[in-house]
Length: 331
Picture 1 (cartoon, rainbow, N blue to C red):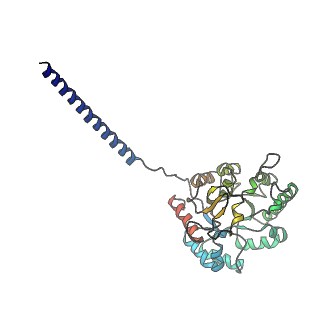
Picture 2: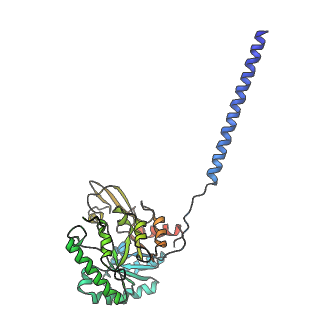
Picture 3: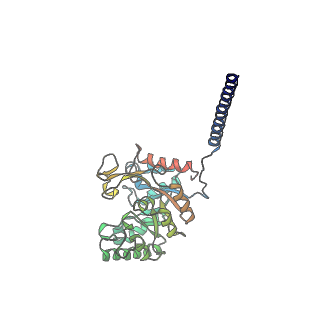
């Protein structure tokens, strides 16, 4: 009798254990189904931009192509859907009259021109004449020589800032707006705690000098691109160079100082590795930067890639940036 009761008890326990196992399996299966359903229903959030900015390209990006076939290169750029071009003072034997005709024929707007500062100082009349023919709106100070940079020689820097303002006043009288294009060295902290970049603009009126912010170099210098745009917003930065890059480690010298040293077009030294990248292929948060550019009154979104990368040639790099912009409904 006791044995019968014991075996009956065991049988019930086994049944209960089996039922618990089945219940656990059912619950696990249900949880898996819910998880899969959640994943399937989850959609990738796409940034919605409030408008489209006109897209141009800094022609320095395709300089070897221009040298080989100026018109043909402009034509390829136009066929990508790019609407504007920014020159860099080099026309490879073509007259500015001819260059302007080609731009008009191809539907390209010459919106800006980088002009070496010594030309602005020594022959401002010619600079004004050529850019009047091209029809640009902006003339850009592209690069500050080492002796004049903030943190090197305070007096020389002060004199250079003043000269920039003088040139800005002259080109403004002729119907242009002078812009300053940065690299990373302007963002150096000065002995008084101020930033060199800010001092360039603090020493000049906004009528005589505005910004062309190079996003890559601002970020590389350790400054927030979006905050810099906001600081100089309300139309004070009409053009942004939306340049992307990839950095590993830390270089012992500025990347642009290494251009041409490495045959693979990357910038390498014992400290690290740097590479220019098409938009969306580097480490910059380009969507956030472009949104902020729109909010702060930027008028032109300018593609620039100083050196090719990722196995692409110069035009291929520009095309890759265009592809990314189109994927974001920005072109």
